[in-house]
Length: 550
Image (cartoon, rainbow, N blue to C red; front, side):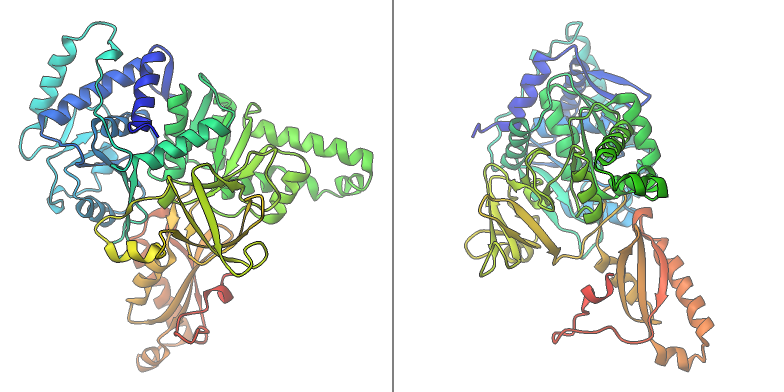
C-alpha cells in the first residue's frame, strides 16, 4: 500500500485537472480544481501560522457545500485530523464532541455558529467561518486575523493563475488518523471512531476499481458529509477521479432531490432506503394499484411492455443518466426490492458501518443477488459467528484494511467491539454464502436511520424519557418513517397524584414536547403511545425490543 495513499491521489488530481470544474453549490458558486488548490494553500498558511500541528484535531460543521469539502481536504492534506460534526446536532451535542475530541480549531458556517457558546469549549484556538474563509467568528488569542492577513500576502506573491504545483503535502503513514468520526453527539453515548488513512484509501481504491464513474462525470451530494457513507461516495472518491460534484445546500426532501437530479443528471446516485421507498410509493404504487394495470399485468406480452414503461418513468425521476443507484445505511423494503429487480432497475444494496470507513460488502447491480448486501469487498474479510454460517444467522464479524483503529479515549468500548483474535464485531446478524455474498438477517444494534441518513439511537431518547418522574419504562421505535415512543407510566405515582387517564395523556404530551425541544428535528418523537402494562423482559431484565418493533 502506498504510505501516502489518498493524500497522493488528491495532489495528483489537483495538478492534472486544474482548470476543470470540481465543486458547485447547487444554484450557487462554482470551483475549479485550481481554485480548490488555492483555497487549500491559503488555509495551510493559516494553520501553520496559528500553530496547528500534525495530528491536531480540527472540527468541521456545516451543511453539504463546497467550502465544507475544501476545508476537509485542507485539514487532511495538512496532516491534521478532521472531526466532522452533523449540523442537525443540538448545541450540547456540538459542545460535547468538540471538547471530547480535543479539537483546537473549529470551522463553521455562520448558521451553525449561532448554536455554539464558545465559552463552553475548552481547547479552541478559534473559529473560522466556512462561508468565505475570511471571517473570524472567535479569536481569543487574536492570532487568526493576523494569520489570514499573512495568507493573503503569501497568495499575492503567487503567479496568476495559481500554480497548483506549489502545494506540498506531508508524508503520512497508513495507520495515522485521518478522521475522528462521532457516531452520536450525546455525552455518555458518543463514540469517536478513529479512522486511519489506510481505511479511506482502501475504500476509495475499491470504489475506483469497482464502479462505473469517470473523469468529468457528475455527482449530486445530498447525504450528510459528516457520515462516512456520504463523505466517501459523494465526495472523496468522485473528487480523486476528477468528477464534478454539486452540493445540495437545501434540506434534501424527495422533491428537492428530484429537482436537482433533473438539472444535474448525475452518473451515479447514492441513496438511503427511505428516499427510494418514498419515490416508489409516489410514482409507482398508484400505477400498480389501478384496476386496468392489474388486469394487463396478467398478460405476458403486456407485462413486459408495462414493466419497461415503469422502469423508464422511474429512471427519468432520477435524472435519466445514472449508471447505478447504490443504496446503503439500512435494509431496503423487500417488496420494493423485489419489484425493482423484476423491472431490471439499475440499483444495488451495499453494507458497511462507520467503523469500516464504511464498506464491508458491495456488488454492482448486474451481479448482486436478491436480498443480499453484495460480496465482501477487496482487502476485507467477513466471518459469521455461527455453527453453520451459510444457513444459521450469527453476528457478522470483519477485519481488514478498512477497519478503524478503535474508539477515541474509550479503551473499554474498543476492547468490547473486537474479538480476542482481532475481528471487529459489527453487532449485525447475517449469513454468508460460499461466494462471499452477505445476507443481513437483522440488527442486534437498534440503530434507526433518519430521513437523510442520520443515525438515531433510540437508547439516547429512551434515557431522556426515562429520567422523567412519570415514566417508568419506555421504548422508542421507528414506524412509517417517524419516531414513536411506547411509554409505560409510573401508575403508582399517577394514582398518588389522583390523575385520570386524560391527565396522564396530557402529562405525557408535555413530556414529549420537553424532550423534543432538546432533540434534532430528524429524531424528534412524533407520537407517544400509552402502554397499559410492563414490557416483556429477558432473564437479564432487558426489554424484548423485537416484540414491539412491528
